[in-house]
Length: 241
Ligand code: GLP
Image (cartoon, rainbow, N blue to C red):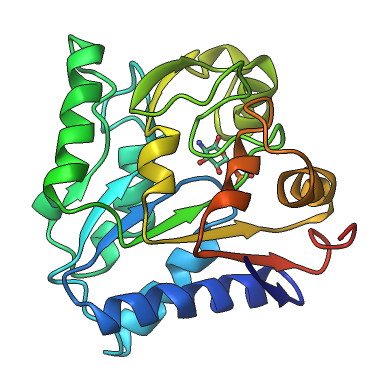
């Protein structure tokens, strides 16, 4: 595990963007595993800035996102498809047909999960998986559980996750209760993982995830077993380590 210490949020964003940019420059047709949430917004903005300066070319990149809410159409402002399109994809030259998210509106969600796993396999796996960290230690939407779920699956979100994500919705009761998420196996099979964490409110969970026992009660703890994990975190998030 490599820990890159950043001074603050913007430093974290730039440092993480540097790792992603190096991946894209070294392998122009790479598969990027992408994440949503507030933490990674600064990273996308930094990559957009470098793209606009002509420093990065995304034209051969494929992307697979970690997760999507069940029941929100792509045009819904809180769907992860909308987030990715508006915060990243529409501002760079990635081909829209090369961008992938689970379809949370699929009639048969189980089939959709199998489709997504097959897609990741067909793409040859993920070269670099970007991750944020939920306050309860979730990665993607892999919530604390009795066992690690290996493949793409439908989850019922924990109350704490619904509350945490309510800040993006007008009312808490508008937050979907279910989501489709990539499983632990697809995440762990990524050749490189970049975990980005910022702020004092994540300090305790980050310490548990990186130094506590590996347990499905804390899904992010599995990352300790990954052979190529880079943690990019700011001083506040690292303050207990
Ligand atoms: C959501 C996403 C996760 C993300 C987490 C943390 O639950 N499904 O992929 O890592 O939020 O979000 P934030 O960065 O806003 O704290």
